[in-house]
Length: 130
Image (cartoon, rainbow, N blue to C red; front, side, top):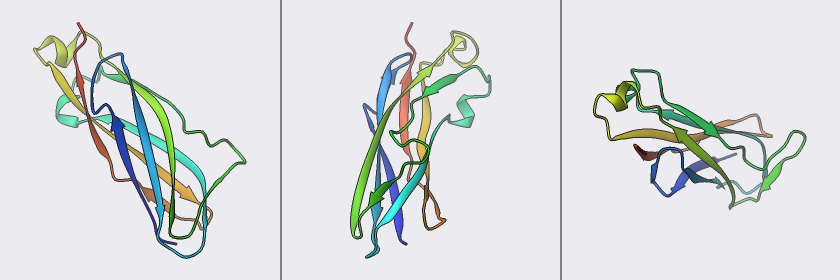
């Protein structure tokens, strides 16, 4: 199966403590349908800005529960969405004058053919919310 996936954000710049929407599009270029069995959301800060280890996030979960799957038709696509939020304490990087931080947002997708697909990631700019 030829599965690809990509992530889009709305908005792509957000204040800390404010939610943003993640939209995952899963594309199937094969002729046969494939079932998405699970999606693992990914959200992490760019390492050069996360040396203080004090940034945190809360991730939503795509609407795909245990024992359920969503079929992606041959030569078709399916979309999933959820909300995330980045929490930024007032210490560390931010206390040293940081005004924004870049986070990487992505997802891992498993399908019934045994494949694990890594979605193309998107960058989120988080600004300090004093």
